[in-house]
Amino acid sequence: MYKIKLAIHLATIKAIPNNGGIQDGINWLLDQEQMTKDLKQSFEEIEEIIRVVRSAPDNPYEDDEQICKAILDKIRDKTKKK
Image 1 (cartoon, rainbow, N blue to C red):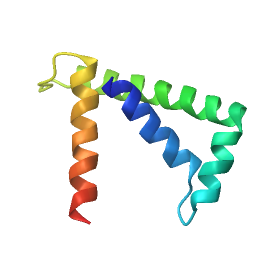
Image 2: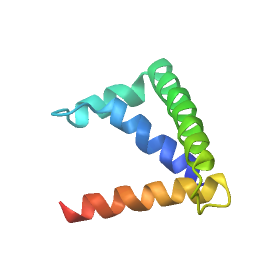
Image 3: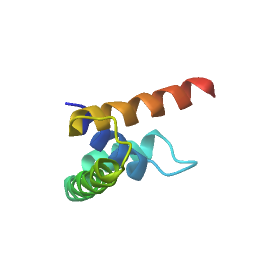
Image 4: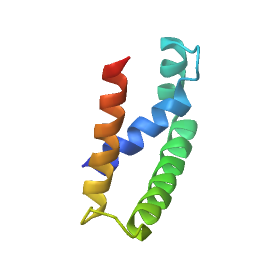
């Protein structure tokens, strides 16, 4: 569940560039090919992130979902501070 949420989060960053707007998001949603490409790339990036975290000697997380949840929590905390 958290892996999917994180993938969607990463994909939406690709969909709506800095200084972008709602029209960029709508265009992305209407472009099935681009949306699929971005989601696939996001899942690949998440797998790499998970691999790096798992290989850390002080990794406190037991599984992929915990890693993804921790990342989402950090993102949420950071956006709340703005």
